[in-house]
Image 1 (tube, rainbow, N blue to C red):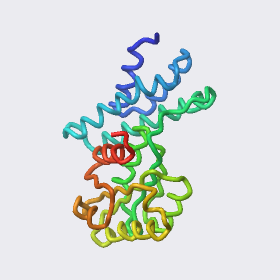
Image 2 (image 1 turned 60 degrees about the vertical axis):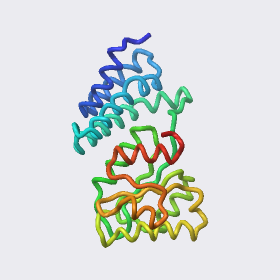
Image 3 (image 1 turned 90 degrees about the vertical axis):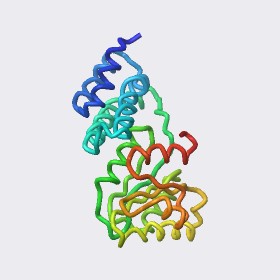
Image 4 (image 1 turned 45 degrees about the horizontal axis):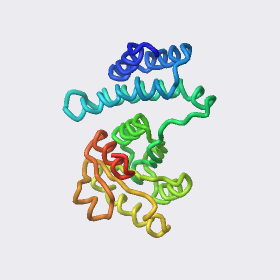
Length: 217
């Protein structure tokens, strides 16, 4: 049995938002013959859970989440090669396509959600900002996405969330993908009005909502 202290250090590296330390500990684990899946599930993911709870409670803030997400990604990147060699796969909860809608170039909130989803076990396809409805639909079809996340930070661009949903319907894909929306002008009422499946006010809520949408909540 590997020393539990190593797992505790992994969790702490994520909590402290230290990508280099997280990567170093991952490499140390591999050198000791520790199963990479064990490292993720017993070391890094518990740390990410603590961060998510801290953010939800108001003890941590967006920069903390961003750095912890980067630490988690660094650790997973260091472990991926050995995962592939062993033909192991992380428990992927689902495929998520995410982006900021056409006409809107706000990125921080969307990127934070994408990072948190990836850190929590989702396969994430981040299309960036100013994404057309057609580009969203094409990517959903290409990767057979389970969830589509639409961000809009302006009252002038929030209507494009509805445009994407209508385009999904026209393409015959609406019943194949769950849609979650977010952004300052968005709301639960707006989600219901445009036929979205969910709404999240922040990154922690987004992760919880997406988990519920794919039946893993």
